[in-house]
Length: 148
View (cartoon, rainbow, N blue to C red):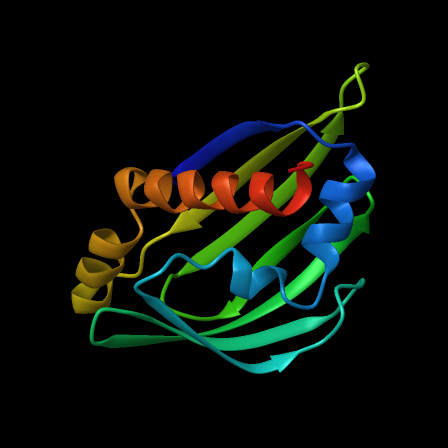
């Protein structure tokens, strides 16, 4: 099963970074330009909360249903209940540094389906495209959390 890792530093305290990720508009702000996100159901981030959305990357819509768990100020996990991959488990971690800043670590365990759906998911969810997505997310998080 493939695993993807991303980490970046934010010159802001863990509490601010966590609050941003728990905010109602975080998902929209973490979606890069060119991707269209339509939320169908978005519960406040809490143990057992569900988010349902459609994401367009080009002309192909991808419908997702995600379940949230392991909720704390230092992170959370979202797991695909239904969507374009065979499986997807994404752990978000916020780690405070002694200097009052924060590191953001993301670990994604995912598996592609077989057949034509697997061909599409391999094109959309591979190390290179995930790296680009998380470079955008690092920039968006810094913009939202760091003092101007």
